[in-house]
Amino acid sequence: MRKGILCVTLLLLLYSCAKRSTPEGGEKDEIPPIVLGSKPENSSINFDEKKIRITFDEYIKLEKLNSQLVVSPPIDKSNYSIFPQGGASKHIDIEINEPLSDSTTFVFNFGESIKDNNEGNLLPFYKYVFSTGSYVDSLELKGNIYDSYERKQEGYITAMLYPKNESFNDSTVYKEKPLYISSTLDSTFFNFSNLKKGGYVLLAIKDYNNNLLFDPLSDKVAFIDSTIIIPTESEFDLKLFKEIPEYKVFKPYQEFSNRVSFGYRGNIDSLKINLLNENIESIITKEEDTDTLNYWFRSFNYDTLRFEVKNKFDFDEFKLAKREYENDTLIISKYIDKFELGDQFSLKTTIPIIDLDNSKITIINKDSTLIPFTTEFNNHKIDFDFEILPSDRYSIEIMPNAIIDFFENTNDTLNYNFTTKKRSDYGNLYLNLSGINFDKLIVELLNLKGEIIRSNFLTSNSDPCTFENILPGDYTIRVINDLNKNNLWDTGDFLKKIKPEPTYHYNDTIKVRANWVIRERL
Image 1 (cartoon, one colour):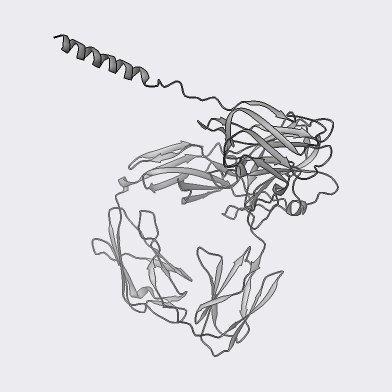
Image 2: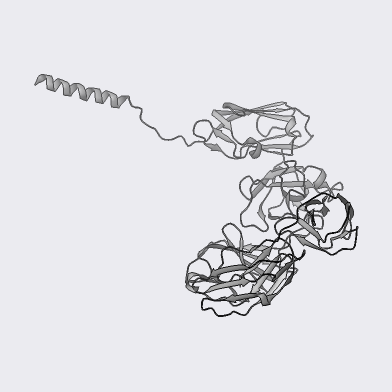
């Protein structure tokens, strides 16, 4: 009996000892690093040092420093170094390798790069400030930068301030870096601090080349078209846009025997392409999803193709030596694979169409009733117009030789079939636009990818706006103020000081349900 009691006592003792030896978990450290001090002190004046040391109460690390750090006024990255990078330390060291401008306040804004080494607690937007003059500038300018067209906003937009003086002109932003910069980081908000009193030009760019210059071929831009006087209590909203690039046509290339392709950029409204060899029949088409024009021509004997390409202001000549290429093949396919009520049945072709014989085409429904129709064709697309009813089935038969392309190729027998859903499978959306004070409106129904599903063109915000037969799902609304009444959204132009056409995005997601009528007031 005593042995049994002794064994139990020993087991309890061992369990108790084991339990006491297990470390108890304390509260999780959620305190960000604390700056104990810096040498020279933050906000120093008459600064002429080559090294700065910032000391923390614990080990810190710097994450994504290249994208988070903003130095204003800009200092070339080759002229300063920051440590640690890739390791942990209780210090941040800044080494400056160039003479700095006199009587200037500099700001090193670390954004969201400083974190403690253990838990990753963030010390947000720590700034080290110093002045090479006798005082530290302290004025501020704030605002937001939004995309002028897209609902989803881009981050890491660079806001820039240039002094408005006799040396500033419209070309300055292409050639010279700004005096002050700020970054939205991963938000839309910008904040310039430690500014000097005076007049400034404010603009913003999505700086894809990371050079603090406006490169219109790659960058988006936003601007305020009046001089900003600092100090000010106003906040400024800027709308970012991508310009139509300057016109340029590239050297043509050939992949098929009777087609030459011309890549281009910019506006081609007045562009003309002429084949100088002979006056032969030709046609020019634009590729649907690329900035490419295709020049189609009838066969003739040549050694070198010579082209003249011109618009209102430019003139180019190109030559292509003759080589052996395959002929284009006529392929005809449905324009959309999945047909929904409200869609138009269309065909697309690989070679431009020059003739269509409707007498060789029949359309019947599920009751084998002939359906009257009309057609229109434009280069690579054939549109069929006929009444399409819900809960029906349609069969389209296209007999041989109904379609003739530019090279006089014709089709074999083609058959297409599709069915339509019940009307109750769709939802309807009715919008009240009385709160949108635009002159002429383009109302776009978008899916959550930002793709345009339907568009309505209205002359007034009091006009009814209806989207019928919409597939169930989540949608958003974009409204465009069509100032020039061309049924398109028009972007801006920095040099001409033209801003993009205003847009409005409805904040809420609209959920469309089958057999429901949704009414929304914007």
